Image 1 (cartoon, rainbow, N blue to C red):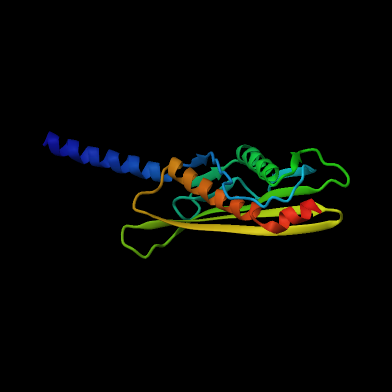
Image 2 (cartoon, rainbow, N blue to C red):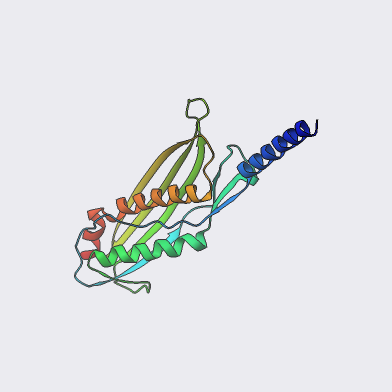
Length: 197
């Protein structure tokens, strides 16, 4: 009798813990990194480099579908934008320019904007398998001598899972997604051409 009660109670506690884990919020620290080659167009000239967040909110979605606030996924602008700034400066340096954060009249500039980052729950169509649908959008704006070039670079990923991804797994997936977006942006030859004019 006691054993049966113990088993039942253990099952209830396990189910409660599982549900609580599914519904708990996640605050993710991302570490995207550009690893694609960039066009070599600069010859040491200074370029003002700015990374900025164009999103409306730090909340990028939630793991449960719907609007459960306890399952929200948050990526803080204050933590992500300095990382994007580092990567943008490194990319501009690798292009052959000298990056600076100080604006100046007549100096070429490059702005890397995170326009969108979204995490949505999809329907896989398979029993016992859910999926996460991720989308990241960067906008790169190059300005030089009165000319502006704007490129938009979208990365998408669909990840199937039987157990909801934990914070580390989601952080890795989103970091990879943003790394792909930066690779697309800084591989665009038009950015380097305009900055080098």
